[in-house]
Length: 361
Image (cartoon, rainbow, N blue to C red):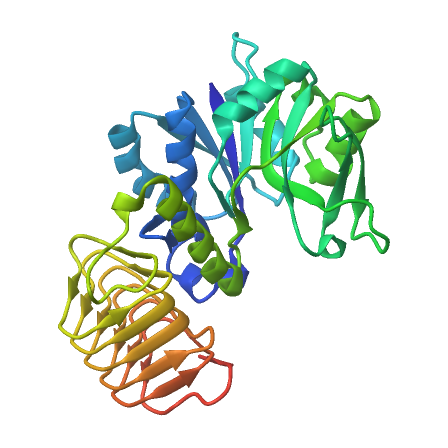
């Protein structure tokens, strides 16, 4: 079975992290975002993943070569020379996706994090016998999204309503699809949208079905949602594999700590924290709702909350970092500095406090 992951663009919403790595390689819960998806696909028998990508394919492929062998899955790139939207990349990768088996293939949006119930989706797809299946997820504020209007009993999709003013439903496209190869005949090789052009036509022919996603869902393409996504992901670990979470007198709530990280005396860590490989957290540090990526050093008595600390950065003694501060790679925050929502580009040294949310070039 095959799958295509829509990697797409430049990840501008997650800058400054994406100035160092393509977005799918940015760590989420201590492993690159895209690896969560590739592992889930591998687990249900997908043996080839195609990455639809329009920038830095070498970086992606070099990085994923190790995982190819480790996971025993073939990973290839299909490179766009111009942005092709969400459907064009399928036409471009057509020859990689079609084989003699006639089996359906998965398409995933690379920003989406969930429990990936892909096995259930295959069963759902076979049972309804339509041409395409999409995952939908329930949201509290449907007016911000494109809403999928569907028959409750069968899941048959009736129509799509973009940012509805009146309530038509609360289910939105979750960015996970299972498509018969015939769907590729509907797509031209040009910039085109699968949500706005391809799916509505299949729905009009009554061949599109939607499955409601069990468990959590988050598009983690921007910092605030990344932090929320981490909380939901750790909640789900607590339910499904609690042994992966850290325990101890200094841990509060759900925390994931890489085994190579070192944590000093008298720290208070959690809830909703990820500490990456090779990190050093000195004594008396307080961490909550944050990600501390590979190779970071947090010095004594520093306090970090609701923030993302990029690779190999340092947070000084008694420093306070909060309110969606994002430090790019190799940023050094000096002792006793306060950052209130600073977004700091890579390789900077911060010697004076950032009192209101701003970008530090």
